[in-house]
Amino acid sequence: MAATYVKPGELGLNPEKLTEMLTELEQTVEIHSISVRFDGKVILEGAWEPFSLEKPQMMHSLSKIGTSICLGFALDEGKIHLEDKLLDYVRDELPEEYDPALEDLTIYHLLTMQAGSKECCNNVWFSKLTKDWETNWLKQPKIREDIGKAFHYDSGCSYTLSRIVTKVMGKNCLALMQERVFDKMGFGEINWLTSPEGHNTGGWGMYLTAGKISALAQLLLQKGEWNGEQLIPAWWTEEIGKIRVVIPEDEKKALTHYAYHIKAGKEIFVAEGAFGQYLICFRDYPVAIGITAGASEYLAADICLKYIKEAVQIPCEKENLEEAQEKLEEKLVHLTLPKPEGDKKDTNEATKKLLNKRIVFTENPRQIESAVISMVGEELKLELTVAGEKKILFAGYKDWKCNDMYPNDFTKRYHAVSYAFDEDALYLSVGLLNTSYREEYCLWVNSENVVVGTWRPNVTYLPAEEDMTWKFTGTFEPSCIL
Image 1 (cartoon, rainbow, N blue to C red):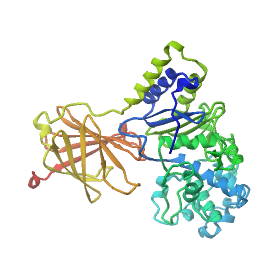
Image 2 (cartoon, one colour; image 1 turned 120 degrees about the horizontal axis):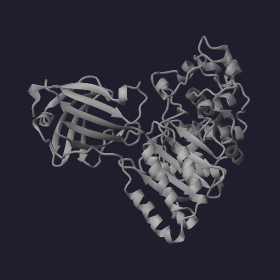
Image 3 (cartoon, rainbow, N blue to C red; image 1 turned 180 degrees about the horizontal axis):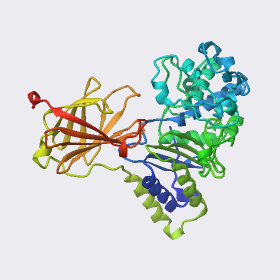
């Protein structure tokens, strides 16, 4: 994907404010990568190690922008209408018993999250199903009096729209986006998760980089035109970001409303994904931003809005411009997430007990059944049994060592691992590079010769433990001393 890179100062933007933006972002949320375009040109791009600008990350609800674009194709070709009844398209998938309120639902209600959903059926909800995603979603009860009148977020609406688009267009959403948008923009092959029936999930599961996200945002700002070709109907790009439905809990944020499957505010409209993923389009400035992250707080859009406005409105002193640009570039070169602090090798008898023995673990969130930990030069070698599979990982000392545990499977995680010992314990930081997730492990041996472990993720869909820390234990196999 070709892009033109320009120093922000050359476009009249204040590099000092952009540096301040990066600083506040990394101090406030866990950001993984960012790409900022001004007037179509890339003015800022960077990634916090071990995450990168090259490795696509699984999008959560940011993926909904793809479903919305595909619905626009169908609308533009007259194959569907916003006022059409939902059941006209899914009646053959209805369960034997269903809420009569389904008869009231229209395509518009699904698109604007006004379907009266009692529950948000998200990716976790759907992943527990082994078949019949659509039928199972159609079993869910509705709040009839809220249909068309109140915002109820539900990714089941997105999956259903994806199914309907596939039915009327004869191609699924990924095929449509690949053929009409991604290939034309030079993205290469994009991946998008599917249901057991082979339909794109619609509301999550598209894999993108920050650069590709910002390019999609730029495409919307350009009213669907790219390199002189109309990729998305211009009228639909104008409709997508219009303010439509109040989001009550967001009334004090920059994004106060829901639009056509994305969020919208007075100054920006945004495709937002869980854990802080953003596709941001500014209304008053030619600014497009892509962000990947693993954040529990949804503040990045507000932070970007604040500093982008200042970068445009507050000029940098001419005599300070070159230095300010150098500081911004220096900042971008040294972006990194925290690594474990401590020593390179074991420092006492307690820690040495962890090495060169097989440790069998109790139940833990990552299904690590056993481990053999050893030193190979300055690297730490981890021979693991994970959910019944043998895997080998290497960890760098105060550095990230990248491991591809599942080659050629985009749905599996790439692990970047860093380690350090302190006086009593082994600390591991793990970046799961094609996801929002980063994890910290701690292992030590107690006075009863039991291995005690903790697992702390940056974000998770799991029911929260105290202090977001899960505990487990392990025992040594005496016969397996290596």
